[in-house]
Length: 348
Image (cartoon, rainbow, N blue to C red; front, side):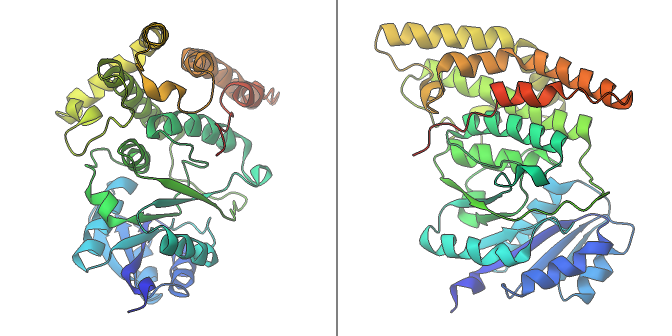
């Protein structure tokens, strides 16, 4: 059997009638099966996807990208596929990059492969690029490895890896949860340079405050738990050991999880200082406390200062936002982000 026959194309879609057919047909040029999860669309997305040849699962109401992905993972596994190639429905990604993913997958069948748009930052809207750099900085810390573009939806997932982690978060947080938990359990995550297309006026379903805020709360709370575990268990830096471990312990319910995320966000500054002191005291006594802090090759003081400077980042972002509304466009954020969050880690 052709190895590609074990790879299934999956597309989470919401109100993407104008672009879904082109994406489906593009994926069919490289894979034999394409499954679309229509996440409660109201514009005929499901019909357009079927007409293009995709198998379509219709969710009765919009539940968010994370729920659509979980449905797609389960369906692909039920059909006997070992791997899924996920691509967004909005036409931002070029399906003709799929052979690059398949080539790397054949050589490294157990790694997650994620597309990277960072090779052409000039093509990415400035506010998105700043958010991508900050997200990359903290998600890479939590995943114990440098991931060039943590926000790209063009990815290849071995279903064995997906099955080894428990997905508890929804909407856009799910993709971040996968990278962090897989990386923090020892799975390698590889990046591939891909083309990116941002049509003028392209709509996005990502809500800046709600969705980016939810991602930020999850990542910060994960890091606080991770570093705490490393402090009590010196020498380890993979703190996720499967469902119910690490950060999962605090997902007792949605309400409790939200409270926990809020508390860890509000206390992350003193906690980070405490972890820093713990790290340096450990060095004095040759105890590798909070081992992952030094794994990136970035000076530990710079890692900790980047956490401590988060309120300043929020402030300069608000100043830029107000300035843009007034037509001034100060763009203080870009310089601040480049200085404190754009370090690409140690390159092997």
